[in-house]
Length: 215
Image (cartoon, rainbow, N blue to C red; front, top):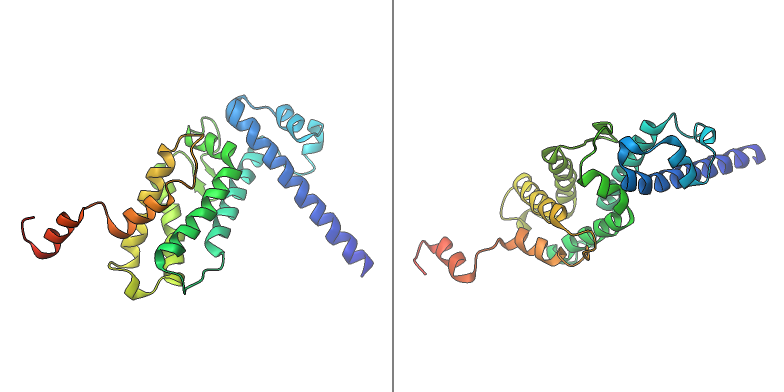
């Protein structure tokens, strides 16, 4: 039992060390870009000597790939958070986006790298096809569709879940890419949800669309 506990402690310590290295690397990649960042830069930021990093990662590419993988893992966790089905759909959607806004704030350096292009970075990392906006939207859409099927009733949606997921992913992505670096990530959440649920037509236009009458 003591041997097993000791092994578990070592694994937890290793996992913490890997995470610390990845988070430090995100800042380096954000400042210098992937191509210019050296293993020495990454090691210095994490408080290690360069050879010590090889105890945790095979090299710079492995660090970058694992960093994107960490982001994917934590994004997936936002979709797995408990949902109170007693709340209105609007509130459930806003709670999901708030969790993702907190994630974006925590990983702002990495998102800054990905949003301005990956340069010589690996094009496929952590399950993401980097540098392809369509792939990014599809990646989010797939996860949001699964979330809808678990947490939204059929009578709450006016269109098939597949269509709703496509539209919601597109709206959310549009706001994400246009957000300023110093913007409040929570500010646009009610607007994103409102656009997804109700569109952009005013009452007169919406009424005309339903009845075919001229406003």
